Image (cartoon, rainbow over all chains, first blue to last red; front, top):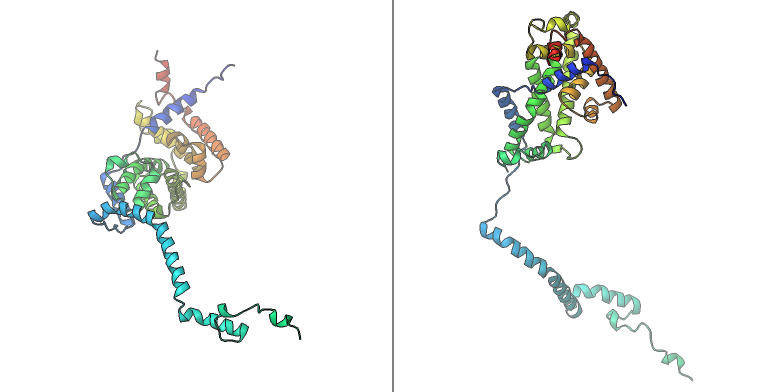
Length: 128
Length: 201
């Protein structure tokens, strides 16, 4: 395949382009100073983060590690204690709705757990 | 936090802008030193007036600083964004100029006449003057596309983003612009010393 003959005008133009490409205008120091001044003036002010005490900073990773390890057993222990307290202490505030429910169901004023919801059938079965 | 200049000099503009938004003053310095010479050259080529070119660069950079905290990485390149802002500012100024001085523009000299000493001397300054004069004769969009492609060395997709047109339109603009430049400079081959260079062994 033959290459089409190149236009000599293109050679000249390409030479001019490459020469012009290398010519980058140097900003004057005054102009650069103005640009910098504006850049600083427009720069957002970010509040500096308070630095922790060096001892705290050193201990922090270890503390985080132990907190991570203690988290599951601590949760379990808390749930266990709460269950124990609810089961045995029977605080009045918790018992009140239970008593009133028992009252509504059986009309006895007893705690719901004492109400015999399925009475014995013995009375019905007696003859005579 | 401010990093030393050496550590920042290799960072891309997007990373520097993020550091600028985080309060790094050295990042501001690196960005100004890196971006302003190229942008000033580009704007000067379009306006051919140093004071006006400096005003445009200053305004474009100010818009960049204000934009910095909201800059979304990966969405656009900082240089492409800056070229687009500068091009729009230049277009505004050129339109204002045209409104003010229509008569003066009509009397604009021909490229061959506007290059001082082009006939007499074969020096680099004459060649650049001839090229600038020929560029000045191109229609606005052609001139912008040719300068971005052949002098700033940007790719067609980048130019398309800057001029907010399609890639095919960029190709058409640069091709037509180049043909017009070649035609405008054709008569000055000898004056600019290109025939003498070819004659050399």
